Length: 441
Image (cartoon, rainbow, N blue to C red; front, side):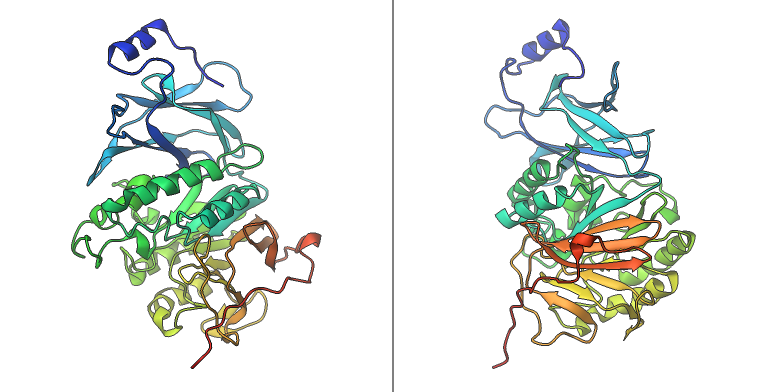
C-alpha cells in the first residue's frame, strides 16, 4: 500500500533524469531493522542498495515514510544519506533513524527511491515499556539453506527482536566476499517477518568471521576498525556514531533496554575491543540496572564452551565472569562452537543451585553444520548436542523462560529462571538430541 500519490512533476523528473520508465524494477536492495537508541521509542531502517553495472544506477535520493499502523493522514518522512563501503564501489548503505515512536506500537513504513516506491510497505513494532518481551537468539548463521530455515522459524515465534551473537555471513571481513553478504541480507529481508507481518529488528554482536585481520587480503591489526570489520560497522546502524557519552559503550559493545523486564548487553569477545576494556563499563551498566528482573548478555566466544577447549576461554572468564556474578547476570547467549548447549547455573567456576549462578546458553549453530560434543558432559554442562537451533526467551517481571528450537520448530530444551514457570507445552519429557562424538583413537 502506497502512502502517497506521485505528482506528475516527480514522475517527469524521474524520466527526464535518465531513469527507466514506470514499469522498471528498482536496483537490488535489502531492508533490515536495528536500533541506535531506545528500543521502545526509536527504530533504525537500514537500506542497502547495489547497482549491477548493467545499466542500473544508484538512486539519486532515498527516503522512508512511516506512520502508526491503522492511522490516517500524511505519513512522516526522512531522507537518507548514502554511505560507501571501501572496496565495494557499487554498494551504498542508508540509515533512517525513526524517532519519537510510541512504546509497544505497530508502525508501517515504506522505502522510496527518487520519490517512487521501491517495494511493498513493511511494518514493525516497538518494544513495550511494560509486559512480556520475547527475544530470539542465535549465532554462526551464514548464508546456507539451513540458515534461511532457522531465521524463518525464529521469526515465526513472533519475537520483538533477534539477537545474533556474531559470525553473520562468514565473509571474514573481506570486501571481495561482498556476494556472501548480499545473499545474507536477502535472507534476513525475506525471513525476518512475523506471522503478524512485523519485520523483526536485529541486535548484533561481532564475531571472528566479521574481522579480516590475519587473513589473506586483510589489513594490519593497527588499522582503523572500519577497515578491520568493514561490513559489520557499515551495514548495521547500532552504536557507531561518535560523540556518545562513555556510558553508551562503544561501536561493538553497548546496552539495549527491554522495557521494565530487562536489559541486553552486547559484548565484543576480543575481536576489536579486548574483554578487559569492557569490564568496568559492563559493571557500571549492570549496577544501574540492578532493579531489572532479567539481565542478559550476547557475545561470540563462549566462556563455557561445549566443543572447543575450556582453557581457550580463560581470557573471557577472567575479565567478565566476576562482573556477571556480582552484578546478577541472568543468562548469557554464547556462540562460536556450532553446537547446542545449556550449562548448569555457574558461579565463579562452580556449579551452584538454581537461581544462584549464571546460565550459559549456546553455542551458535543457527545455520552452520553442527560439530561434535564430548562423550560425557563436561562438569559445567547440563545438556549438549550436535543440533542446529536458536533460543527463544520470554522475559517478564517474574523472570524468564528460555526454550531452544530446531529449524522445524521442534522443542529441544527449556529452562526457567526466577519465579517464571515453564509453559505446559514445554513439559518435562525433552527429546533425545543428536550427539556427534569424536571418539579417541
